[in-house]
Length: 156
Image (cartoon, rainbow, N blue to C red):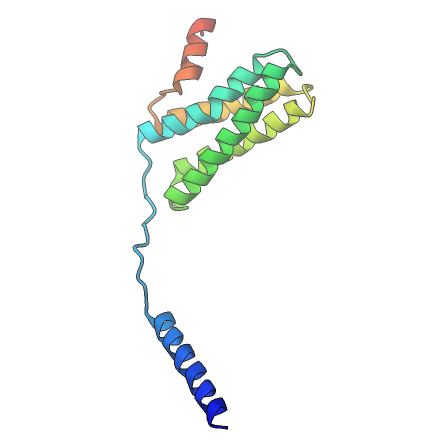
């Protein structure tokens, strides 16, 4: 009986010691979300979203090159969305609009990867309108470098 009591007291003592450790409050610095997005950050996000998309839709439909570029574009959009959601509060309008753009581009890339090219021109136009809207409203008309370069080549 004495051994059982000693074993029971030992267990209680060990559990008590563990419980004391668990009760210690560990304070972590909780990073505050940003309330503004700089022009440079916004342009960088737009570039990440559009670069592989533009590359992919300019390749031959169904080609390995197109599929590779669009797969990379999907990953880039996912990265942009995750980073913006982590870094910025929900009240940063440009951040919300960039996320909407990234989701629209992702949906279009998925459709192209699935072989649906029927209304690609209309979707490209809609994406261009979204980019133009973000550019005009938040970036004084500045476009992502790849898109700007492509338009200069087209003479537009």
